Image (cartoon, rainbow, N blue to C red; front, top):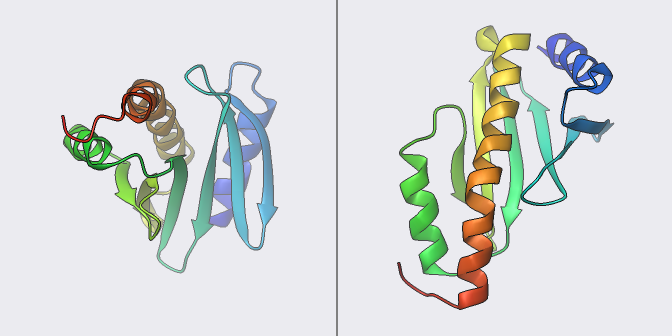
Amino acid sequence: MRDVLERTIRVWLEDPESSVVYAEEVDGRWAVRMAQQARDFTTVWFDVGERSLRYEAYVIPDVGPAAHHLVLLRNMRSWRVFFAIDHEDSILLRGRLPADRVTHGELDLVLGEIYDTVETTFPLLVEIAKSGVRKL
């Protein structure tokens, strides 16, 4: 699993068409940074476990119940990633692949879904934060 992840990260970094601009291993996890249009960058953390590969990307700090409502609705469209709220109520994207599904193609789909989800949801979350809307 780790070998597939590391090879895939190298391919992303070497591909001029890729949005991946930086990657490094930090304390046994891989941080992969993507350039985005909706915001400057998104960092996806990949954590190789014994039976699965977990991934997570920070989206925005707590901006209230309206944002939580929006991301729960967006979860119904997700396939490989889902929105979650951490212990500080910050909004994250998370997911997990079983070891036997970790392939270059599947990792491309994961990264693409994270990219697309941030692109389509982040501007709405910022608008909610600016407007002070508490409920949709």
